[in-house]
Image 1 (cartoon, helix red, strand yellow):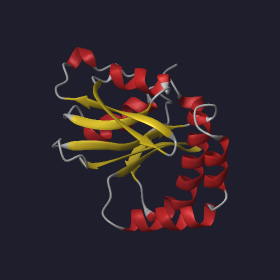
Image 2 (cartoon, one colour):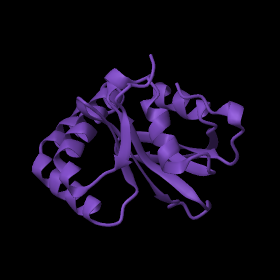
Image 3 (cartoon, one colour):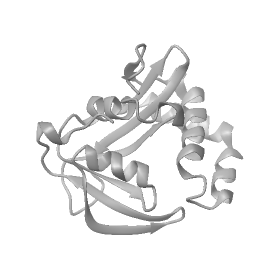
Image 4 (tube, helix red, strand yellow):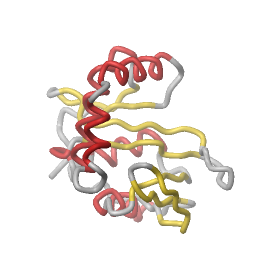
Length: 171
C-alpha cells in the first residue's frame, strides 16, 4: 500500500483533543488486543472525558505532538521530546500510533520523519508487538538489552545511534 494521497502531517492543537483521544484509544485496541489484559483496554475507555481533558492540557502547552490527517480525519499521531532515561541523551520517541487500516502505507514512517527525522533516538516498545518492533528495526532502531516491566507487560528499549539512508524503509 502507498501513503494516502491526502495525508497531512501537522502539529496537534487543543481543538484536536477529542479526536486525538478517540484515535489513541482505537490505536491501543488495534495494537494491543491479545497482547495486554483486556481489562487494561477496557479501563482506558471508561474515562474518556478525563482523557480528552488531559490531551487538551498537553496540547495547550508547547508540545511535540504531531498528527497524520486525511480527508477521513486523524489516522495517526506521534509524540517525542528529550530522552527520559538517565543513561541516554538526545531524543525519545514517546508514542507513535496509526490506525490499523493505514498500517503498511507509510503513515508511521511519515510521522517518525516529521517528528525526529533521522536523529539518534530511543523508544520503548511492548515485547510481543512484532509489527511495531519490525517497523522500528526498518527505521534503524535496535534493541539495546534494557527492559522494564510495566502494567501492560514487558517493554524493551530500542535505540538508533546512526542511520544510513539505506536503512530507513517507509513500510
